[in-house]
Image 1 (cartoon, one colour):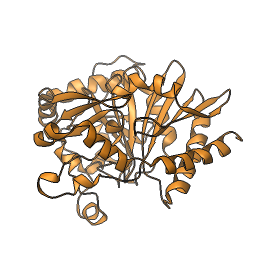
Image 2: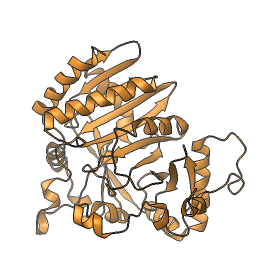
Image 3: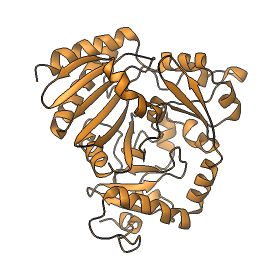
Length: 339
């Protein structure tokens, strides 16, 4: 193991864990330990305690707007190819801060505390090597993480053009269950959705409600979900014309023997108001957490100005249109039911 990785790893003895403790328990204790030893993280959570929120009722769902100044780092991140090439990757083990420690997972991923939290317990889980952000070959790991962390956390994935602030380094994020409004709404939304496939091993439902058009996969079989994601990627790529990974955000959790995976196809990375000039500009860069119902802005003036109409405008731009979504669903219906 490389010295830069070995240096990061926190032993069970250091965090006073019994043998057999699950990954969720290890991560929870890691966070407590890092708050004591890492000033930047401690400051991040002190700032989170001062975050202001308000709830906006939409058409059939709710959005919680969060004014979180520390998120300026992510919201304003330059993710163009030239900017990526010119900066050091902040997720590579060799570039992590001296105070950062983590927990190894599956020999190739490290659970790290996120110093700019949105969740009350927020983790970033990068690959140990510098490899591009792609879900196709790593979705199985996302499912494994959701399973391993099921007692406390859910997993998120931001595509390289869908909110990832490090599109050049494969990583996931995790946060505590119950934080996102969508978690409480999903049962009702699925009940009103279109069933695209319903077999002994998996259910696939298209939800076309409240502007956040998304696909819901439910299964207790890991390989069935991995196969379904391949079909979903193909459907989105066909609908959008994307030659690389189609733009998407993913939420995944595991409960009572079943994974629930929510996939949000995207049309744009950032809304046009992000690039506007003067008072017309609103600095908001939606990612998976925003898809889940917590819309985060680092600027107080934007926090005050976000209304239901502005949120409709944002979602109307960044998510697939009804026509493109239906095209993708038709592809899914044809190909999933024959598997």
